[in-house]
Amino acid sequence: MSRYDGVTILSSSRGKQYYQNVMYPDIPVSSNDIYVITDFLDRLDLIANDYYNDSSLFWVIAVANADFMPSDTLFIPEGTQLRIPSDVQSVIQAYNELNGIS
Image 1 (cartoon, rainbow, N blue to C red):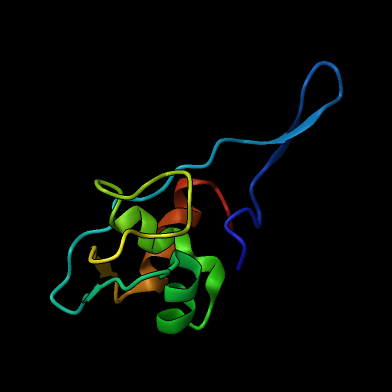
Image 2 (tube, rainbow, N blue to C red):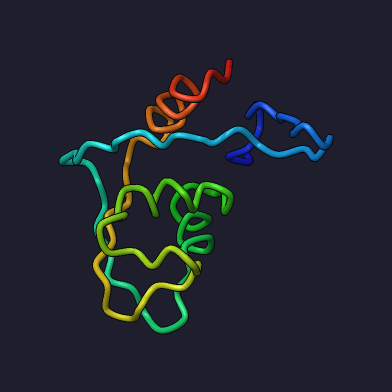
């Protein structure tokens, strides 16, 4: 699932296309969430693939850990504790509702 599936594509007055800004849901902490300590060269997409079998869901982990995540890379500093949300389907549903995706 691409996080841009279903996101509205707009056009500027010059005809240039762009995606409408997307909104990300708050992801509440759950007692079922998984916590991992990152290792050298760990990446969000690889971790998402390990836990969700879908590397495109890297953004779920990034949003859940937004307070200390670098915003310009998929790499995570070694030794970082990450929260892996357990109920990814609820996160995707909340994302779709926020962005008007059916």
